[in-house]
Image (cartoon, rainbow, N blue to C red; front, side):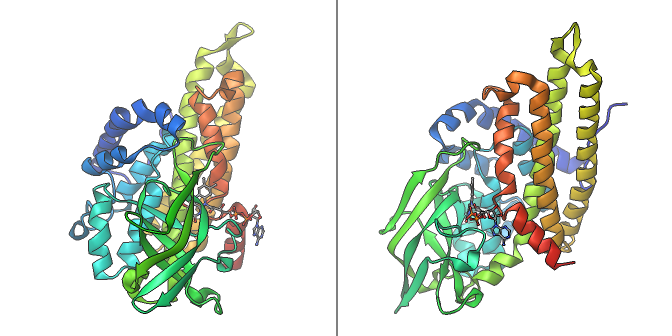
Length: 382
Ligand SMILES: Cc1cc2nc3c(=O)[nH]c(=O)nc-3n(C[C@H](O)[C@H](O)[C@H](O)COP(=O)(O)OP(=O)(O)OC[C@H]3O[C@@H](n4cnc5c(N)ncnc54)[C@H](O)[C@@H]3O)c2cc1C
């Protein structure tokens, strides 16, 4: 009997939702993917269509305009985009931003942003990284200075996912540079009609070609005093730390889904392709590699599924979520590299999905906290 990669947390209702997601990806994302890769972004229209199809903010309560589902609905969307290597729409960052509003925002902030984010009318981004600092977040220099009833924001951010298309950006700033974590706040910036705010280059990456990753500049950007997330200064670091399990699990989950997608593609290729009078699939080396890959996926899935169940119960801790991100992203790199090898020269051609999966996989070990930072977090919890 062929192996199936079941999810312990799924059920018929969730699988029906998966069908809806797949229909959307087939109808709207796949046909435009090549053009989006050339442009460097998917455009606003796709976001609006995703909102109309009920695919955004699925785990946000209906009172805030979300679908009222739970993390399983989110998981299905992120998994299927990763399995099919459709990386143009960074719905994960969008969901993460929505969760900042949900978990830390004031009533007014939730009302103002969440319904529009669920409809895909307002794309979300979060800007932490700066040209001078990434892993060492406490060293950020972007400054938000209070003046009467507003803040003035000055600084620059880089590598920001959804940065060009974003309607709302959570900007991590220093409100008190004399303090480390306690001097950090998250300021909400509406990008429309925002004097002093500028999107720089949409960066040219080796992978994630259809996804916009941008530089952002803030030059005396004036936001009202109530634009501090949660309404109280100095909470930024606490807010960032609180949402790490959610963010890191999404990366681990997409890693396993990408491995599943890569295995599917590779099986089809090696069964079809012949060398020395036999299918590539029949060489013992190929069968052993595929067996190793399938085993990695099964083992990874068991752990990720446990993390999903823990998250659903509100019990996923940061160190375990960091393990999901660390192990998942490292395994994804190894597995997809092995798949490319089994494709031979075709595996190096961008027109083959496996080649795009290879370059997309590389960033998983870097963003959302690098593998080295994951190890620090895990080691501290031992
Ligand atoms: C495509 C893409 C999308 C991104 N999206 C976003 C986004 O939406 N928002 C955002 O804010 N940022 C985003 N980032 C930034 C990303 O999170 C950072 O690149 C990442 O955190 C690493 O920071 P850095 O690039 O400054 O590397 P550095 O911090 O300079 O690290 C360089 C190397 O040193 C290692 N290192 C650093 N500190 C330690 C340590 N204590 N111990 C051991 N090794 C260490 C790192 O692991 C790494 O290998 C994105 C990046 C990319 C490329």
